[in-house]
Image (cartoon, rainbow, N blue to C red):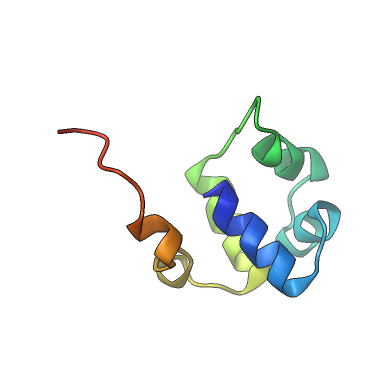
Length: 74
């Protein structure tokens, strides 16, 4: 999910602070998600970020990056 948000941020040329402002979340929430040592991502945060970016959840998750993930349970 983090890679997808980073992809969108790059496409739209926005920084983490701007994403936070658009989404009504604290910048620390976005930075916690982006920090590779923390990666604190909740469904609630994903929904708020998608709302701020004006992207439906279905469109967010329909990106090719999710099709390439390996199955966790075999």
